[in-house]
Length: 417
Ligand code: CAP
Ligand code: MG
Image (cartoon, rainbow, N blue to C red):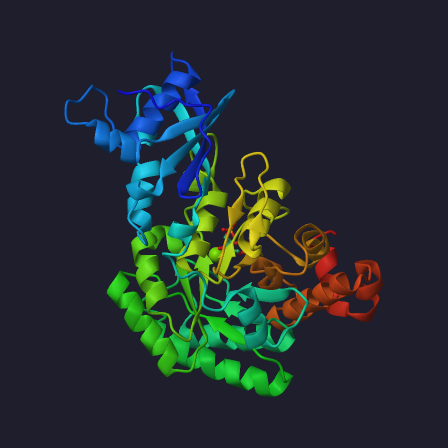
């Protein structure tokens, strides 16, 4: 293995930079860093006669930062195929995770250079496009996931969607594991739920959207998007980690006319603990490929995600430029539109205010159990959630708002806020 440590190296505008936290087994962080740099680019365990000076000159990585267990490696962009996330990940998030010399390795962040950023399309709609589509200028958006996750038939699903919309929800979505089961066929569900959407728009005078879960084999996902378009749907939802980056890229290429919602089911297999890939990295890649909305964690809910982490991810995917901070690399997004962060998982009306305080107004707040678990049913649950969201947005204390809305009072009592 050649030496790739060069702490004097100044990354160029064409370098991709990866930040890792490294815990080696019986060797120094510096030695481990050298192996990580080599294995993730041009080298291997043994000296090799075939690694010529010219290859090294053109493609050699540089470990330019080592502090405690944090290392940063700059890779020349010529190592990567443009527009190919699987290839980039097979390099900087590939073999290195299996190296015996490491106890744990965590990819904290990737900085993408302009050349690579420009080889991707990014979101079609982005935050602005979604706000325009829904005709909601400033307030956070409110969504629900039909519950139970699986078990209802298409008609029951569409009826619950109608009640949710009438109660004040903007977005209704399928759950991550509901696709095309025998008791709730995709086509029938989409047809009936979009019919309910049309009715809800007439009743409320508001724009409403439905996010059918297209998750499947890639060609099947394309057919499902065709069907949604033929039924005048405006959204498609995809489980981005179980389908994989390649499937997502194909879906993005064929998603004309549809907003893409990214569910992150399974992310914690990568993102939890000291080993794996951070959620920040996953969210950045998803934005680069082009999801319009993505689950980032809900801070106060049932799923993982600290306030610091969720806020950083929110900033990263919403902003045009991100400053360097611990475990976050600077990033300029050039022409890539911002992605809407989605907070979901274990939320109820009493948690909406602190969530808006932490995330700001550009956030989609989703309540599944926190709406369908309302003692008076889904309609009351949706009213409680919308009133809590409006009060929080306008700075009215919930104690005050619950006096005017019985549904909210009952919800806050049930979830003991
Ligand atoms: C939320 C949810 C979402 C989670 C995913 C669920 O329902 O539908 O899938 O939000 O977690 O199935 O748990 P509840 P994350 O509102 O009933 O919890 O957003 O962290 O990826
Ligand atoms: Mg779910």
